[in-house]
Image (tube, rainbow, N blue to C red; front, top):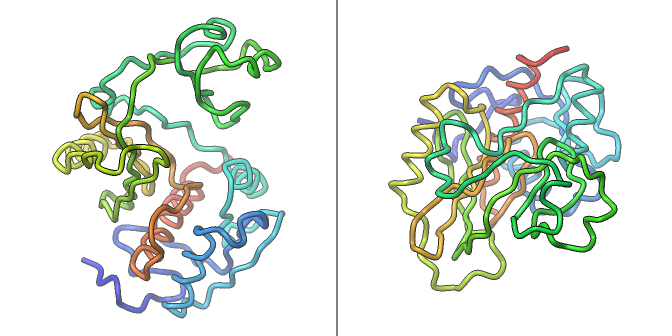
Length: 261
């Protein structure tokens, strides 16, 4: 077990079960230079005296020893420059299907537009924000856009669970408009999700599980977000700063090591 307060080596080799190469520099996308994500990263590096340079740039760099941090598009651009394939999309993994508690089907925009479904894009490219299929602003988008479609459900709350190397590091509520007295997701159900995903062998080294409580009181999976580009929610503390960086590095190292072109 890692002592969260222990000093790490320059390449964070104390991280559990991670085959770490030497990270010499972290490149934060310029528009996120003052974001919670950037503050957490700089906090972790400063506290642990890791000897890793942190810079802001609109260029994600091309060296595998440089960790790009920013939007999905920014990080994927960095992977391409490192001659690494984009990882597969893992929004709704098969091992976690039973935890969705709603039908989510693959479709194309033209088959859903104007209807009553809730839709979001499939794939890395996000041509529109998730939401109602009958929004007028969808009319100008390619009708062949791949989407997920599902019935509307009401979430009482939404929580993000940060996971690295099979271990739940922390969780934090992130929905802006749910009731303040909403029940928290069941810890038992969260652990069941984690166990099912990890035991399947499909779970990446770093990711987040977004979990919520439906209006019927049941805890359900909202979606999985890959750990190469994730937001930071909650209070920035030394331990959470380190853990956030653990998720990013664990996933980056895995991608670099297993998905070269």
